[in-house]
Image (cartoon, rainbow, N blue to C red):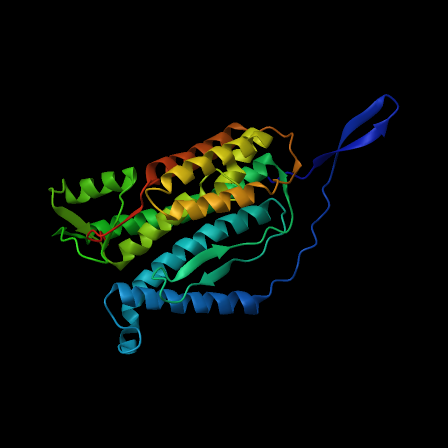
Length: 311
């Protein structure tokens, strides 16, 4: 059952004593369904266009073949939907006031098709345990969709010769995908690479988004998790991660952007109504699952330019 009480302090003749009382119910705002639906439809359109481009279909001249962009769009949006609904349902379970997911379209030339999705947390977590569960629920839920999609993509993948050319790129394989790929396709000879279909490409982006969210810094999901575990000391973890990303930025420029994002969001303090309730064994188990996903899927150089795309 979700917690129903949180501590406050009340005067006593011998001093101030902790007192447990029911938390005030957050004032829930009525969802603006129109905004959520319009943003989702726009994101569906931009991801379908991205999927068409990945399939080699011109989104204007061959608009009648829009269905070829659907596998990519539906896979990526399903991963993002489960990620955000993991946060949403867990937050509602713990009595928090949160918005429905906002999907963010990204029109061409950004070939991913979306900037992701987010929910607004309009009330703080009741305690560190709730904060940890809310932070971890999204990445774990999204990963549970991305992993089967990636396994399916490997079963339909082909092994092709590497032919570097200007403008081409390759996607890194984290430890988990290396294991899955070798288990399904066997050892890959030097000079060859795995060519994934659009479902695999969307699943790869979904896994990468999961890793980014699990970075233990600032207001990211990983930042919430690490704060739930170590409390105020989480700021030092955030700064260490920011410094590490600055170093990795010399190998992949995108890490510089995430280092800046981590630094900016680390300046905003975490707010928990009850920072004293200790974590239980289940909480550490959930944190361990999130850590395992992060370690097995982290890629120091996720994208390399000038090589054959592994997608």
